[in-house]
Image 1 (cartoon, rainbow over the protein chains, first blue to last red):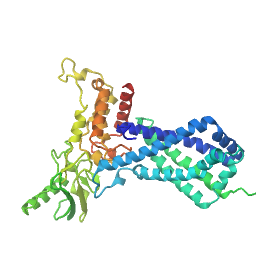
Image 2 (cartoon, chains in turn green, orange; image 1 turned 180 degrees about the vertical axis):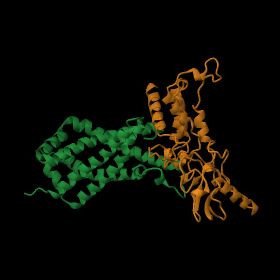
Image 3 (cartoon, each protein chain N blue to C red; image 1 turned 120 degrees about the vertical axis):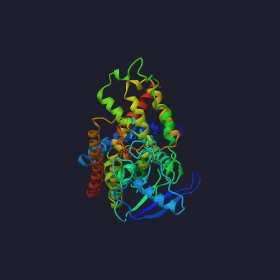
Image 4 (cartoon, chains in turn blue, orange; image 1 turned 30 degrees about the vertical axis):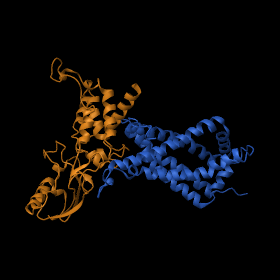
Length: 222
Length: 248
């Protein structure tokens, strides 16, 4: 990918735009997830729509997966290039003196989020693909709520999800506002953008964590 | 004061270097950091040893020549100064001070603490100029009206002394603060508009060719810059580059 995108600034735009795209996706995701707490029926309807609408399945879903792949592959490429650019490491380097921890460790928060995506895909996406396209089961618009709640029954999965959301929060804390700077936006609105981005970085992962914990604590009893 | 020094010693560009320990007695708190190194060198010469090579020139904080990583920070622990403006009163009796050269693949070590910063010269040569008659004839540059904010921002960008602290501080060894300051000082002025698109494209291309890292907006460069060059310049360069790319 670095061969295709030779300019360091072009790589910066790709990271920023793919990141902003994923931020927009998070809004959609958290909104539907919140429905699972407020209205299981609406959650079922929305999930069924997302799962069977051809536009969502065959256009938006591939674009989303491409966005995720571009973002993390480019992240790895940048990390390798940046390590090489230093060459010999300092014997003593006080990174904390001039830059916050979150901004210096995006690769690690990103790696945790990527590992989480692996688990999340295993939990939901692969199950969904198998249900629809391998086992070719009939459509059942009422199954989603029960399947979701059941997933959060084991404490280990709930804990792993919550830890991942904490790291997602740290990743967003720097990444969201940073993408505006990368796209050349640094003006009188920047302090406001930073505040909004940091509020988003707290509220959205907190909502995801709340939903996971809520379903763990409120299992469906038959 | 008694000071313990750990200094990077490297015979030449091709040799393998390493940290060497020195102990200095009687260091005065009103000595500048470079004067302390001068005293160390006098002692080394008296003992028949090779003095520690380090860059310095004006010793007034305006030339950008001095370049030391001191205890893991470019130009040492104080803000908005170069090493020549750093004084030993910033340290305490018994302190250990680690002194290293700027570390970047694009800034190879020449000897000891001296690095080759000609990469910055090549970035500047790639587009950091304007092709207009600056003689004052036939049009006096001062007669061209320029908005005060733009003039101030341009002047602030032009205060970059090209010391390389931004590269040294950046965890990615990125040169975007330097390059963006040099792009901005012209991009903000009417005289710089003629070559604006070519300038940003060529300077960024040269910056990449030199092997500097990518900017990840940590902001370390802005904090460590002795002249307080702002990240706004990097955003401006990002806009200029995007606009030049779209225009083709």
